[in-house]
Length: 69
Image (spheres, rainbow, N blue to C red):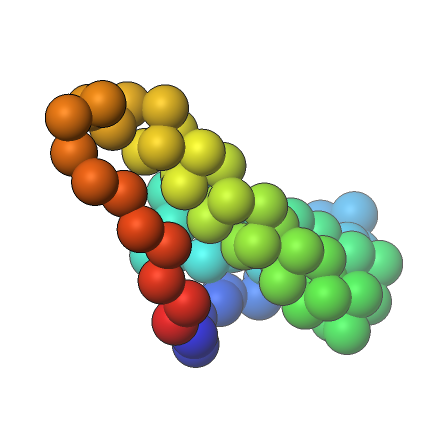
């Protein structure tokens, strides 16, 4: 999957990375490359958490399957 990420240098010199498609998915790093690596981890964690929420809310009378994208 591909995601658009914004990078912005904060006043303290750190780089803030945000994924607008995933509300609240934000990370940072001392350098741009570190911020990009950190936002990749944050995106993975965000998607995992959403999947866990969906699985917990699923009704027991529905058949669940896992698909890779």
